[in-house]
Image 1: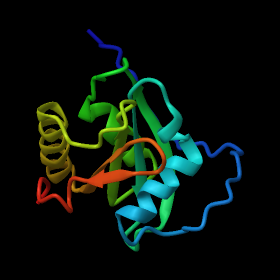
Image 2: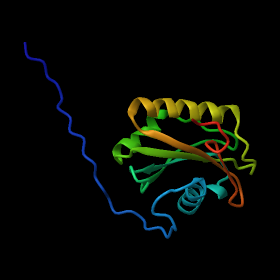
Image 3: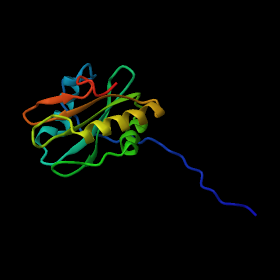
Image 4: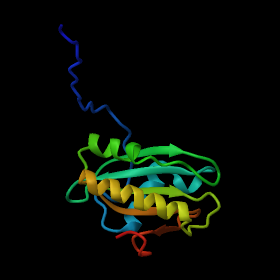
Length: 152
């Protein structure tokens, strides 16, 4: 008896996208990353938590920026599966995640630290390094969990 199976082909389709006037073609520090998240996704102006990712090449050149999830005024759910789906499709070797705190307070919560650890562990398995987790407040202020010593 023959069994039917599906043969799957996965292809990356590059569609025309928006052009953004950003000062950084590659990322050298958390300030560069925060500037890209704010200029492309306006994170500092969002009224609810938005989690996004910046996908990078081996030379930290920007391959893509993606909104991952949108939550409530004080929280959002982050699945490593959704974070790394875009990284794999962009052929990224590393990434930086960010989210905003609509309150303006950039202090990381326990959930922020736990999410960072979960994404970092998932990235190690996949071979895609989490470089940083940026928390964006209002008026362009931000906090880097890497600089805070909360990410190895």
